Image (cartoon, rainbow, N blue to C red):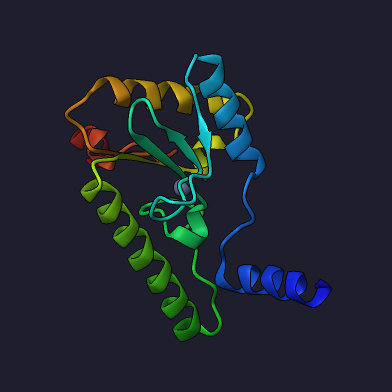
Length: 163
Ligand SMILES: [Zn+2]
């Protein structure tokens, strides 16, 4: 029995899939509950086992680590300097799997939100992320949303600053 658990834990670590119910995820869940949402945890029957499920809204929330799931444009999406091929393959597998899971959820009629962990790092940021989720839920025409803490786009700068 011990061997099985150890092996499962090891393979989970190797595959880069974190154990469930991490702190950022808990914070987000609590913030959503405070806002009055009725949550279902770890809906195993759904593709990708979404971290938080709002069955009423038919919305699935996935809390993704920026490094493992390759949050585009994020400062935490770094690439290890050694064994580049190995890491690229691992990252590609994760990204492909994530995209397949989103497609499958959409096909089943679910809306999806990815809350990137960078959006949950700062104290009190879970409330802000929960608010963004709520705003997205109210925009019923939007099937998917990404919520992350990215730098403002460079195009916001005035061209005069370059002169
Ligand atoms: Zn990020």
